[in-house]
Length: 443
Ligand SMILES: [Zn+2]
Image 1 (spheres, protein in one colour):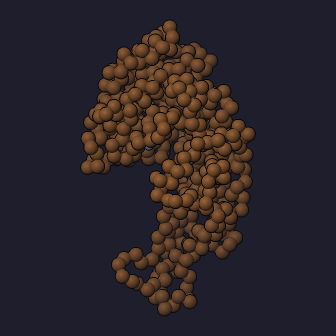
Image 2 (cartoon, rainbow, N blue to C red; image 1 turned 180 degrees about the vertical axis):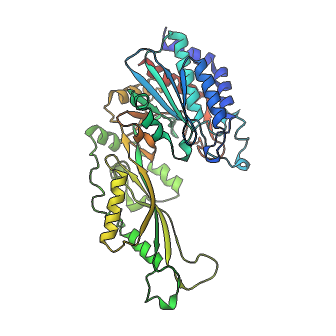
């Protein structure tokens, strides 16, 4: 009995694995359009049941959370967090229909194959193959498969709240996403940034006024522009008092990873079509700013007349949408209160925060033994040192699993087109992903 044998079984079962994946991919499970919940749950219940898992379905106000558990009596547990919902599609932009999976040039094309149905089948098939060879899985396995990830995990917190022991009783959670970069190197994410999203509005006097009377009334557009401009200076220093309080200092190991991180500046410049990075940053300075500093960003801004020609008015209303990417230690609610106070103290009480939501950043230290195990596993299976991200640039609901080390690895690649037309993964990467999972549970 050896991992080599498991790898052979994975290859032997390749057709079965692909058939299973294709069946899953044919279900258009789009939470945003209220499609495919029941069919997905039935499918998951069948395939996890056949594999010997205890399955259960947690109903919510939206799509149900499906869970599966294999209790092997071990004192160690690995959880896999994934989702069975997918992004909506723009059918006319697809080369082959999004819900009719097909293989072209070694790649499987279908909506959800990269994000994130491929991972679900990959992980399940790896565990099945391991069991086929060794007879017994050396750790307990749990799956938490939600159906609303693509619409903001609306009920995942409710699920965790009501299933604390199941959700939090684990030694490691393998998160949903990840893959290989343009050089074919596997990337590992040890955490995600948090996100705070604000909806803003101001209404000065309840109606627009002829601009001949500009001297007499406040202009909603200017008021909002000034309020936004006060939040940070042109060097990106955030001016809201206390905004940087509580940020956790990076450990020495994290700083080492950050300073040595292979951030592909030239490639990014090409992608963005720019000659130089904002503020002329590069190297260690840029990397530290990217990984360690929070941001404030205006996502949308509108006011006044926007039709053709001219209309000389003083607009009374103005609106904006703002996001902040948060780093570990920051708390979304605390920051909203600080922004509110800052505006109140500076004459911007009339700027209304009409809505906000947010969640915290989460990280696992690279020195954590489970992080080390994942890093060593990927090195062993792929034959390359993986690229380790102390934090992903994006965000996700990892903070709903406090105290659980969440690490993201996956089987997509730099051109996988997640959320976009012609979403795809390489069959070979997917099989390699199975080897990684089998090796990880072995370790
Ligand atoms: Zn997604």
